[in-house]
Length: 503
Ligand code: NAD
Image 1: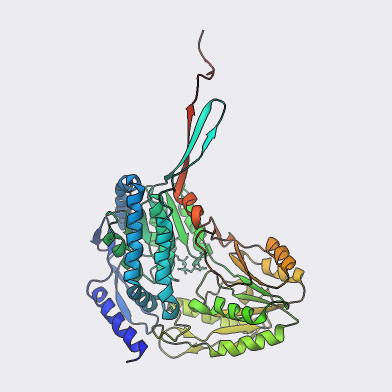
Image 2: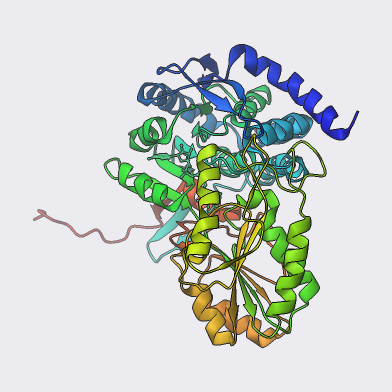
């Protein structure tokens, strides 16, 4: 039996229950059918139906928001050490079911097992990290004035909505839900319609770890139905959203009437800038990893390569050779590096850029073709002879597709890097320290790595500028979003109070 056969057999076992019952919504610790019936979840590997999924709408969101509201006081007031224990229990539950989570995620999204096995464990890490912050999350300052002792404290904002996309859905859900629960908020989670499986596993694991009913509720459905209703619900105090920039704009509009606080983690078209003085072997590895891992369906992917003209020919030649060697295949095969794209709609979008590139005058130097007859497989693709005005340089393709653009000077590289509506990440490869300092100071991005691929460190701020988002995750930045600052002034003496209406 090959490793692929073994994984397929294990997956079959894990999916049996979903085939029987479908995926139900989870509200107040109960399984609940969707008020609009069901929709079907299909696998991008062979387009087969995985299972029915509860189709939630306004009614289901209302029930979930009420459940989150009812559970809020108990969760908020539970001693921090006890809440911490529950979060650690969730981390342990994720670790115990990491294989199930990873296999289901691969089948649901098309992501390769090679990367998803780690994504499940990163989800556990998110819970462990925020569990360790629970006890001090509400601590504040004392700010003495001549007449008052001012004491600040942080309190959880209330029930919050979490809306997540289909790329690495398990990891991204934990990234939002772990700090929300650590802060003392209760949650209504609306997972992406294209990838509902692992959100169901998460709520089960959380309840098994002792999370009280109603603290985490999961409502499946579509953006314009359940998603919109969540943004509009008056009992929901904030929305933590991860998804496309244009959806982020809708989230803001939909939350306006209820004065929603929004945290938006949106799209990117991130540059990796390779100067001729860099360690070119390491730069090559990082350039390839940051666009072709996770199917290129990654907000932080470096989808624009800005390469100095002095090394361009040699660098691109090596790139073509490596890209042509990347293994596209069944996502459950541990050797596979790129699996199928998530949905037919997304496959059509990504492949449309193969023609757009040619129409714009770029060269398809590698890939640019689909693979096989079933499923949504594409070859990893490299466009060369491009300029920054082309659609392949300006638009987020969100697949394993890299656009290479040459530059000659540092000033030109900076101008090209910043000439884009997005500003999530940037990657700079140079061995000139002063250049790195100058360049990163002017580069418009929320996160920049120098001589490194994206390596996430949980205490650091994660988020974008421009059309890539508003707000930051990570460390205390997460608590700033999920909590309110409160200041209480205590008089320290008999200071003069101005008298009105007194004789
Ligand atoms: P999407 O915006 O289409 O959908 C994301 C979620 O929003 C889904 O759950 C969807 O149902 C919901 N939604 C859609 N319309 C809605 C509405 N009107 N109201 C409320 N909810 C609505 O995004 P996607 O295609 O699922 O994900 C890919 C996008 O996510 C890419 O643009 C990618 O860059 C971005 N992303 C960003 C980050 C980040 O940290 N910045 C991380 C991962 C993905």
